[in-house]
Image (cartoon, rainbow, N blue to C red; front, side, top):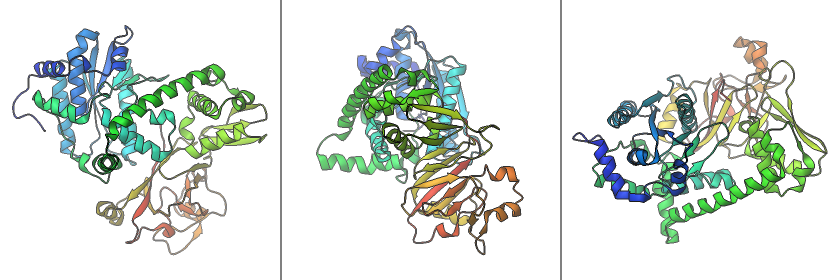
Length: 486
């Protein structure tokens, strides 16, 4: 369904939708949270799609009963040009119809590394900023039950633990940010659309949801239906139950970790290694993650690096040192300690960081490198062959399927042969040719192939050895942002 053919009386439509769902319109744990006296201001994230429109109508219908003060926020990603602008106008008109405050954000036109990952990051940053300015203690999102299995499958592929597989939670609390609420997490996507149609409630349809080159869309339209047919059962309902059980486990583990290692949750500078080693690995890992999060460092630790940290902490090694954003992590026989980097500022020198394809790496300079394995379709090939890619922020490499990549700074003797060059020469000479200052050379990241070769330096084309050819089916897409907010 698209824009309505005739005006809609939105308050009446919301009331009709509320009657249709009755007392089951809001997920029980979200309803309990909204019933607390401390929760009165809620920012409603509304894309204009069926799920968020349904959520907004239900919250409006029950706002008086729950004593809520609602505000609406919409983030325009600009994916679809005029259609994206039409989405924004639709949501704005809906907020006006409900007499609710409305805030709109739009993706910066100069955003170099725009992917699904950065899209989610930019939208979340916008919503949290608006919530803070408007004194909203919670942000409501329109996720529904069918989103759970899609999220679980994606996170299984990344090797997530119980916390990751328990997402999205109906009520997700954070130390420094507003609580995230998902009032529709108990409702099926089909039921939501059927109910909107029954109440003559329109919504905006995002045609990019039909693009199966996007992983989540492929899961929804191809993989999950095949999975349900093969198993002969409703996989989405099973995933929703698993999510609830995993959340119960995660909450219990968190309580145990807080009891056994309170220093980690208090953000102490040092943790007792003996206590970590005495705890079950699940408790130790949880405490280390909480500790690094308290210090704002968890974003600079890849999954393999976290596995290495846990393994080393619980092992017998007496000394260990790990570069971690603007800090070093120092492991001794009796403690795990964070130490600031060398004097002169945390962003003066780029520290080496390992990563696996599909991960984002927050560098010690504050820059971000995002990696994605992508299937090469006709549109992507055309972008690559057009020569219009900005080498300062994006590169496509032939994907060898290997793990063990690294980002590090320039070292004397490094050699590089970018596409279009007659041959390899010292990277220092390339820097001199481009008049890159000596101080910048230590900050400019080098992407290192598992075989040790320099394969990309932002500002240069990728290495000739990783050239995309007509026979290349899968590529590693790398994007770079010179600075990334903590």
